[in-house]
Structures are given as C-alpha cells and as structure tokens.
Length: 380
Ligand code: ZN
Ligand code: ZN
Ligand code: ZN
Image 1 (cartoon, rainbow, N blue to C red):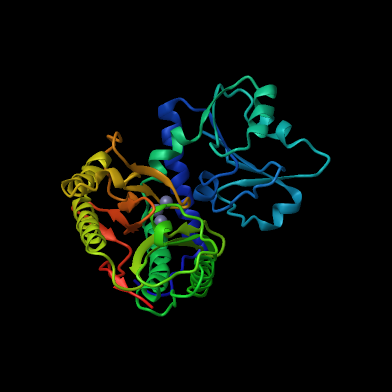
Image 2 (cartoon, rainbow, N blue to C red; image 1 turned 60 degrees about the horizontal axis):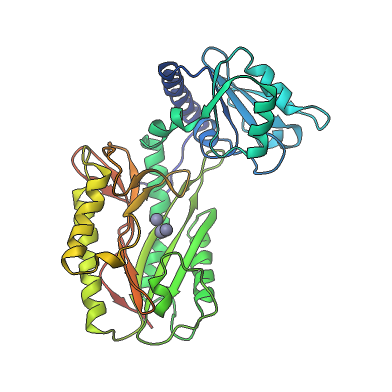
C-alpha cells in the first residue's frame, strides 16, 4: 500500500451515501422508521462527524425518505464538514430545546433506533416526550459496520502499519526496559505512537514481572528488573481530515533476560496457538471455532485455566466492537470482518504472555495487518 493514504472529499461523500443506502435497506427490512444517532461510532461511520461527548445534544435523524438532519449545538457547527448531498445541518441555539427539534423530526415514527451510546439522560428525555417504540440503533448498524469496506480496510491497515513501527522498536531493543518504571515505558510508547502519525493514543499497557499476569494491568511505578516478562499492549487511532478515525491494537511480550524453562515453553505454546488461530481465519468459520482452535491447543499443555479471556474482539472506529471471538458466538466470520487474535497465558503472581494481531477476514483466509516478529525477544 502507498505510504501516504488519501481520500478525496468527493469519494467520501460517495462512500457515506452508499452506507446510507444500506442503512435504509436494513431499516425497511426491520420495520424501523427512523434512527437518532448521537454519541458512539454509528454517527462518524455514517457521515464522518463525531459528536462531542458533552451534555449538549448532537443527533442525526435518519428517516427512510427524507434527507437526514444533523441537529448540532450552534457553537459546534464549525466542526461539521458539510456533505450537501448527504445531510442537512440544523444548528440549535442555547435558548432552544434540541429535544423538541428531534422529537418533531421523528413525528409519526413508531419504531426508532437510538444510538447505543447515547447518554441515558438524553434517552430518558426522549422517552418522556415521544411515544415511539425505541430500539438500539445497533440492530440496524451492527452487521453493516462489522463488514469493513475498502476505505475502512485501508484505514485499519494504515493504523496497524504505524503501530507496527512502535512494536518493532519494542522488540528490537530501541526502548530500554531494565531500570525504568512501567509508566515511563508506557509514556515512551505513547509518544512514539503519536510520532508515528497516530492522532490519538487509546491505551498503552505495560505489565512487568508478576504484573504481566494481569491482562489489563494499569502501568505503575514498578521498576523493571532483569529476567522478567513484560507484556506491552498498545493502540491508538489513525484519522484523515474530516473522516472517522480507525483503531489499532497490538500486543508483544518481551523478556529482560534468562527466563525459567516453563516460561519458554508457555511462550512457544502461545505462539503456536496464536498462529493456528490466524491460519484458521476465513469466511464461514464460526467465531466460536476460532477461539476453540487456540484454546484446545493450549489445553493440551495444561495451560487452559490460565487463558482467562476471549480470543479477540472486532475493531474499527471503536477499539472493541463486533464480532467477538468467544465461545458461544455462533456467528460466522464474513469477508471484511476485522478483529484481533490475542490469546494469552497468565500464571498468577508469576508471569504471563500475550500475542495480539489484527486480521481482516477474506473468502479464503485473512490479511494480517500486524507484521511484527512474534518470536520471543530479549531486551535490555
Ligand atoms: Zn484487552
Ligand atoms: Zn490489545
Ligand atoms: Zn485487543
């Protein structure tokens, strides 16, 4: 892929119009008369605009046969990039009631999809002022958003490529570990992610020694010593002007010296399990099966009780979204699904390891977006 990704405003309008068409098809199929999209990823996915997570209401009203209207605080209107063919803008002044404006716009609708991430306070106001039957907007958008179109795939690939640069620095010894605190290293990783061109860091987990056995460890003051495992799991968001940002997420585990035989074994079991899972990805396999092919391998070595989380999560505008790669999810993988493969083995109070990559499913396999070496690296 070209190192400089660019998408013209005209192309974006076309993409959004095609998404709007699919949304309306699904609305008709489900008997949904309107969507009210506020906070959350549905709105940026559909028109490129992300509502500010404040108390003032922002909402896009989508109906079947009328042009969508973005009801937005007047003071935030300058942030809106207009796509004239796509939606109208209705700025509201501080003395106006935005809820009334939206309720008027959905008059006559009996089934209305509301953003899953809308503030409860907003939803309660709508419920007081409107007799429509409300359902989660995700019933309409979920299956559409989980299949990434070509622009989304390019955005995810670009986010991953930039994040890989930092992961290469982690395993390649460019970052010093011994004698520094987890927090210092976490901050250095964050800074490098921004330098690599991500516009935002979402998280930067550094778990060392016994903390490496805590999958979502909050990096702290612990100073890293010799012969320890260190789990580094980080990601951010890549964004082009005036379009939604897309997330990255990678985990590599490094060691700071000689490790016990058991850890070396554990790591090689994990590496093989993760590879089996990646190689198993293709359209038509169930999400549950992808979890199982790694978990059963890990079980053969008696580590199954130490693999304490699901195999992965979808990724896109949100860090975690559909599909979830977990036991009990019978959904089939579709071409264009983007998700993580991230098994881990964690021996409480001792050490742990995780390997994580983002993949995009194709008909016959998958594109692996992260291409940083997965073998165990020793760093200083
Ligand atoms: Zn996680
Ligand atoms: Zn991660
Ligand atoms: Zn993840």
